View 1 (cartoon, helix red, strand yellow):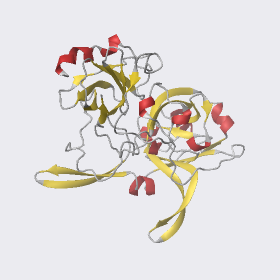
View 2 (spheres, helix red, strand yellow):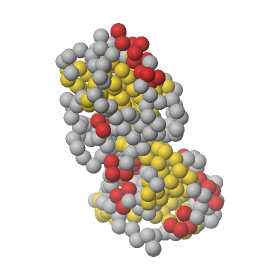
View 3 (tube, one colour):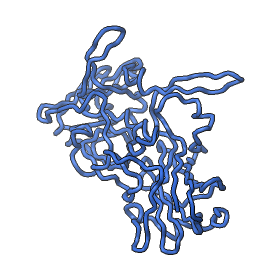
View 4 (cartoon, one colour):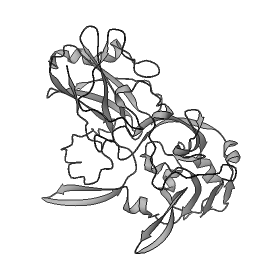
Length: 372
């Protein structure tokens, strides 16, 4: 059945173009087919209602590890210190007075899609703030500075080696990564001031990296000459993965950082002629997306039509396919994204992920089920 509709699938984008702002809704005479693998309603993106390229603020997930910090904007300051010749302290007004830049980037929790109850922790958002790199350069880092640490206002007492220490949430980037031109100190989200749950008054935006790196309630940036090893760098958000090598399993631990190659089937609409319009989203760490392919039941993979407008390298891309002659009964739909470097979104039993023992960085193909 899929073999007969390969041409239709390949031409789906030109026949049924995605709208300028997102995915067309069901037209009169069309119906949305619900998935049998129902996604729980929660404070995050609900895939079956995905239509807009930009995710409304109300649908953007929010995760915190030490609770939501209560920051007084009037007294709030950002300190830049450590291994710099010219340390600085800035108010929010100082930061807003600096060059303004906006970027659309997909924010994804590194645990997204780790289980059926947590599959909407993602959103595509327009972030506005000031670039980090020029500010760091103005502070004149010492030559031996190699690490940039970002501290939030949220805090908790942690037990470390049987002793208790007050800790602020913090994550770090190498100074090379921190000096990327696309990293922002953001104070607006989709044209509105940051809400408390999203890190007001200032948060870090690291396009192409999982959300754990996007430190909220930012208060301090410190440059170091060695690796920063806090709980959320060295002990949590560390992926444990096994790799078969010469008959042995080698286990390695890696810090959660750049996003993976990933996609999902988001909506299925029955059209008036009986065909199905299947739409979804795909995203990467900023590496160009080469293709998205769709598989129906156990048939061959066929190409989906991509929204080819390059609106932002760090944003998700919508895709669409048409199943011309669907048959009645239960069916499975699964997509896989492929990037320009040849990385393919793997099935759950692929050697690259089958021995992964932590839920972070879950980029397996996600099988959706429908009944016609």
